[in-house]
Length: 537
Ligand SMILES: NC(=O)C1=CN([C@@H]2O[C@H](COP(=O)(O)OP(=O)(O)OC[C@H]3O[C@@H](n4cnc5c(N)ncnc54)[C@H](O)[C@@H]3O)[C@@H](O)[C@H]2O)[C@@H](O)CC1
Ligand SMILES: [K+]
Figure 1 (tube, helix red, strand yellow):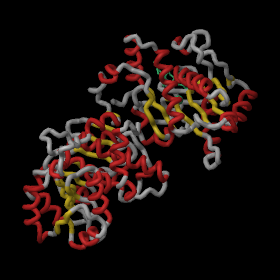
Figure 2 (spheres, protein in one colour):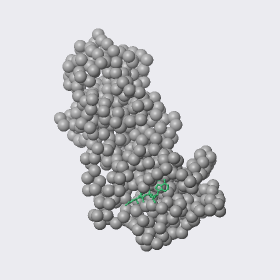
Figure 3 (cartoon, rainbow, N blue to C red):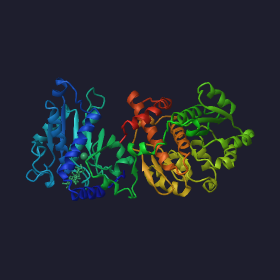
């Protein structure tokens, strides 16, 4: 599914109404999706006992536009489903009561709910007092219709919520915030805060994901971003597939793009992968990348490394095979490569320019689809015009510093233009670029660009990249048995699986202190979770 600007979203919604889907229906669906997301994220315990319900307060903040209309639907649904919950509505400029929300939600129950305006000092005092008691704020102040800097009363409301949230961050009952569509004050096209913006724990972006939400500026405000279905006709969503904006990778894509696992398959079917990894300094990387590739389904994996690395590895991993690789053994190594279908080069290799130069010049390696990571990338960055001699269409997995070295730019420049940087590099080098980080970007030489829908700090840990490279290698070797396999889609699968394993690790252990090794047994479970319908978006 494509990421969209607010103007594109308006156009899609307009077309939906032309296809006889009334806007009020979209809005009812929007409110229902947000409510479901609130339950799913356990911001409200739907099954909480009477005591919980009576002592839990939800503040609904409704602005003058359709974002406020969505909030009113959420309010109505919460009241219907959990009648004992204390749900209070505050209006910042009430949506016009007579004709409904901008004429679009006329005569619904949602519209007829009463609430309090924040007008004078007394209203402000009531609002502040309620906020102190509140467990959840539902933010329907401003959505994709934000058109100017946020100032005055609205800015004060947002500031007050942010401050109370911050002050209660370590309370047994913290203040949670769910943003409808976009956090109020965030420009949904650029991700910038227009003066001030609300800090949410969860943002439910409606219909199609707004492109500004995946920018690094917005990260501080959005919390977890999930996609809320508003019942758009699928054709309308598909019509945008050719848009220049990036694709937001969905679990449904991944299900279709994962290499097949026929019951008749044997280890040869799923392919032999050569992993070239490790050095005396980096003994963990070969373990993580090799085991990750097996956990991602490679049929057989051989680790090519020095004797020292092999000795250490053999004590830890019994499922893969080994091959000694030094400059002296290169020619016999080259012959053996003929039996392999893909290779992963780089994790923990250290600065080993001579070996890498000879390795990449071997004919049998040029014929294989490659994943190049870490020290493999650093070697390329030290080599002038390396892309001229390297075969095309491999997967390169740089973090921002590595991409900065490859493109002779700075980390700041890469971070400020993640999409463009990855896309330009992919086109210039003729390689699939996986630019790691929150919302990992995947770019193909033909211009396709995708964003992985996850920003999980549990994955920001040493060795996490080795696991990702291993997963990509394991998937690539399975896909490469088909002549027309699509490296870009395989890279998207690798990134998504890694992120899903990270999500499962976070559920188990939280976001602090997950080890890269914790991800390894979760890789097959991540595949299963996706097959069973779980998603990150
Ligand atoms: N159009 C549709 O069919 C649907 C829209 N949906 C919701 O509608 C939202 C967009 O609705 P709208 O276009 O009505 O826009 P919004 O609800 O985002 O807000 C627009 C209102 O806010 C005012 N405003 C803009 N910037 C302001 C600022 N800085 N300070 C104070 N006031 C400001 C505008 O003058 C206008 O009155 C989406 O974000 C989404 O939540 C959903 O209900 C799904 C269906
Ligand atoms: K909002």
